[in-house]
Amino acid sequence: MDTQQFDPAAIDAAARALEAGALVAFPTETVYGLGADAENPAAVAAIYAAKGRPQDHPVIVHLAPEAPLDYWACDIPPQAQALAAAFWPGPLTMILKRAPNIPDAVSGGQDTVGLRCPAHPVALALLRAFKGGKGGVAAPSANKFGHVSPTLAEHVQQEFGSDGSVAMVLDGGPSQVGIESTIVDLSRLDTHGPVLLRPGQISAEAIAAVIDQMPAAPDAAAPRASGTLESHYAPHTPVAMQERATLLDTVAALHGADRKVALIHMSDMPATHAALRLPAAPDGFAHALYAALRAMDGQGADVILVEAPPQGGDWLGVNDRLRRAAHGSTGIVHGLLNSQAKV
Image (cartoon, rainbow, N blue to C red; front, top):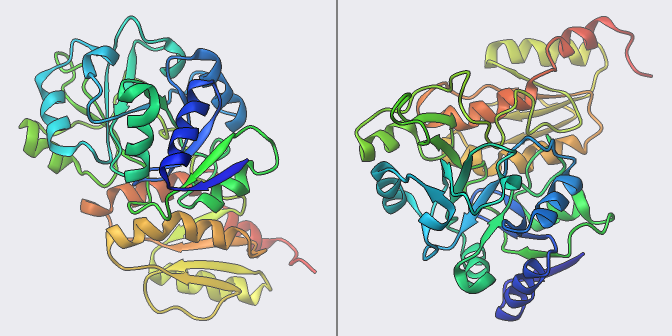
């Protein structure tokens, strides 16, 4: 794997690698993506193979600002045009009806496609160099499926550095947003209206301010979309999220049971085996979250405890990611307290 700092030669080499069917990891303002030519089914299949991603789980296609939206989607509603004008380049993905010429490899076999224009300068330079700015790069997060998304080039190296599946990594520094894009479904406006499939930095209220309609919660018939499985964004170490008062009791009990605790918190906490304090503001917490989960995952702890952030409002995206990271770990604290301590 060749890791390149951002320069014109590296961008050109990455664009040529994509055109040749290779995989290239690149930074966006949300997380690092693992990119392939969206119109090359074999290249898209290589993403799925590298990540261990289920074939029916769609990927998001990234476009340059100048790319024609109607090449990728059909029956484009005016709401989509309004949202693109308001938030692109930026962390918003729109689910639209897939144009007939676009292979279903990117959509998990559905008749929809997820599209977004990222705001990172490296991503924009790559998209403009790839196929003269008219191509699309399919790019889920550059990590093994279900694991913590990468926000640094070194995270990508940790995921794929030894397996030879990724031709290049463009290093654009830390991702500024830190959690994945908001996803809004606009493919069923006549029957369901807009639907918020995944929260992110761009809130439902911000979307409603543009299209004069509040997105609804996901329904059973909503299109499948990236990062919406119940268990996702998870480190190898089990994660439990608790309110501060409960968390203080849990830390004390686990210490008493000779268990190693890694702690991610916002307020004052007692000393633990390992700990990181994150900003008590939603944007700062989101920016640091995935790097913190990765760092705590490497501390040899029995559990990663996370102080639960506030609910609602601008914290919706952070809470969504933490809930999915902790899914399946129900009872982990009880189990640690009621099993024989490790020697």
